Image (cartoon, rainbow, N blue to C red; front, side, top):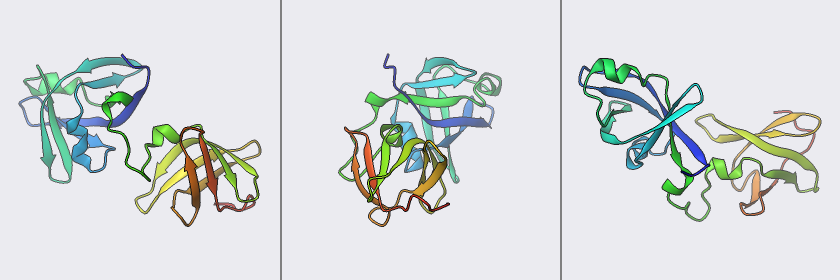
Length: 170
């Protein structure tokens, strides 16, 4: 199994009495989470691989049933589990698209060649994604807006160049 595990969602509750669970998906569109099987379900640092028996969009979310899970009690054990897949299960990103996981650890510099820090996390705001950039003196939140803020992204070199003043507090 690959060492690169990527969390793509979590199980937020049970649905009905036939072993279905409610899924909170981080994928875009939401139903893309159903394309990946097997899933790795994790709770409290313990992971196990499961196969997805079926799944579908439901209302504004997703519901799914894990293979072998036939009733509400069996489904309840999965509540709170993170859903992960291996990096190899994801399709290659299209030109100009990036997986967040590939950019974590990237060095962020501005146009004045000042190193602002390293991407440690991401925040999804709805309007745009925001990089959490940890520098030696402070942490910055920088919007991932191409081309307004993000000037270039070099995934293999883990380098991102931004139009961002080193003194901006955001």
